[in-house]
Image 1 (cartoon, one colour):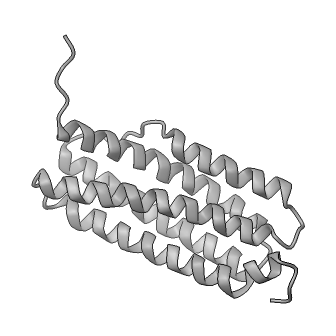
Image 2 (image 1 turned 180 degrees about the horizontal axis):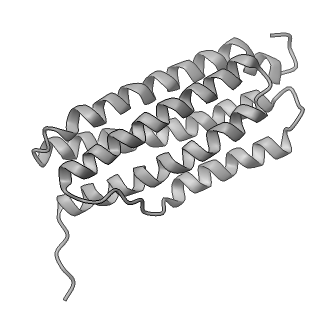
Image 3 (image 1 turned 90 degrees about the horizontal axis):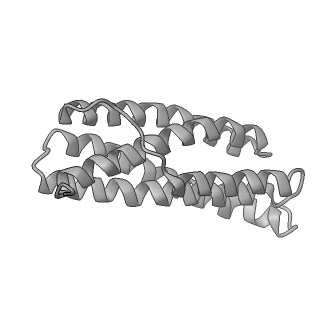
Length: 167
């Protein structure tokens, strides 16, 4: 007979999912930085790489709070989003629209992360994991700030350039 799954199981499962996702993002960000044409884009992707490293460490602390070893679980959603980004890098290489495409890919990643962290915070509160909540909230705040920066970057130059207008 299958064991009955609980919210605790779901929390751990989702934690493994975002842990895997963050590690994939960490690998993708340097590629995106190399591909970006604008200096602001390059710098932004590299800064986010450093932030992601800290976010991974926070997730490891949450695993520790649960008394579990930090292990990822394949996240097909993030793999798909990253693959789309790589496709854009290939198809729009050298074009004026490349940076706009990179920013849109990065925002798809951010929105996935924002959704996951929001859910984990709600569940951690429900499960009484008081020590995990501030760790998850710190990361959520960073993801939201990154999303805002990406929007500003897109509006400031990438979208104008992508449309063939001078930035």
